[in-house]
Image: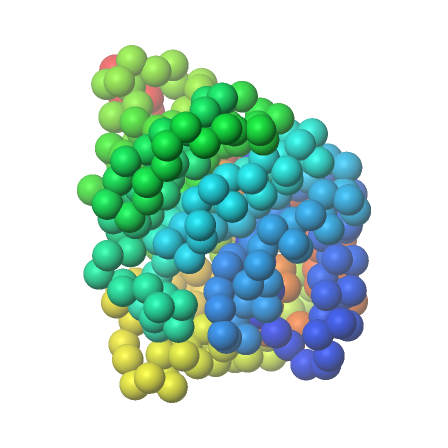
Amino acid sequence: MRLGIFDHMDRGAGSLDRFFADRMRLVEAYDRAGFYAYHVAEHHATPLGVAPSPGIWLAAIAERTTRLRFGALVYLLPLYHPLKLLEEICMLDQISRGRLLLGVGRGISPIELRYYGIDPTVAPAMFQEALQVILRGMTSKELTFEGRYYQYKEVPMEMEPYQKPHPPLWYGIGRLDAVPWAVQHKVNVVGNVAGPRMRSLTDRYRAEWAAAGHAPEDIPLMGVGRHVVVAETDREALEIARRGYGKWRDSFLLLWRKHNMQLPNPNALFPETFEEAEAEGRAVAGTPDKVHHFLQRTLDDGGLNYLLCRFAFGDIEADAVLNSLDLFTRMVKPHLREARVEVPA
C-alpha cells in the first residue's frame, strides 16, 4: 500500500519566507516517515498556491530529501514553452536520481489561463501537443515536431531523463472518458471524487488495462486526495481541521468569487464546512482509530491502491501538522492496505 502527500501550498498566516521554511520542515518529515511521494499543485495569482513555479520548489525538495518521490500534480502544460519544461524535467530527474513524477494537465481554472494570455478553449489542444513534444524529446536525440501550436525541426536533445523512457506520468481524473487515454499511456491517476464515482473510474481502468493485455500487478497507481487531521481526541482534531479548512476553502474560491464565476465542474466544489466535507467522505478529523477506519473505507469503496493525504492546509500551524503526522505514521499508516478487488477476467 502506497501513501502520498498532496499539497496546494495554500498560504496561511505569516510571511512567505516563514511559510516556505515551515513547509520544507514538513516535507523533510514526510521523507523520514516513509511516504511514497509528495505532489504539489500549480496555481497562479491566488493564495491557493504559492508555488507557481513548481520546478523551483521541487529542486529544493530534491536537495533536502533522500527517498521521497515528488512532482507537480500537475504541470499546466499550456503555460510553458515545451522545450523549456522538457529541459527542467530532465534536470529534476537527474538531480534526484530518478525520483521525479511527471504530472501533466491543461489547467482547471480558465481565470488563471487567461492571466497568462491563454484562451481556455484551445488549452486542451495545446496540452495534447505539448505532451507529445515533451515525451518525444525525452526519447530522441533530435526533436522534430510539426503541430498547430508548436513546431520544431532537428533540435538537438542534449538533456535526457534519469528514468527511461521518461518519469512516470500522473494525471488528475474525474471522467470515465479519460480512462482510455490513461490506460494507453500507462498513466497514474488521482481524483477528488467520493467513493462510488471513484469506484466506477477504477473499475473501468482495471477492465481496460486487462483488455489491453497488461498484467494486473503492473497496473498504475489510482488514488484520491483527502484532508486529514489526527489528534488525541476527536474534538481537538475537529477544532484544528475547522480552522484550516475555512481558510483553505476561501483561497480555493477566491478567484472564482472575484470574477463572479462558477466552477466548471460542480464536483470540484467542496462543501462549506469541514463537517459537511467529512460527511461526504472527502475529509476526516479525529483519533487514529477513527482516521484509520475512515481511510480504509475510502480505499475499499474507491477500489484504490493509492491515497494522498492533505495534512497541511489553510491556517494549520506546522507544529500541529507535525503532531498529526506523527500520530498518523505510528498508529494509522501501518494498518492501511489497498482495496481488495476482483480483477477482470
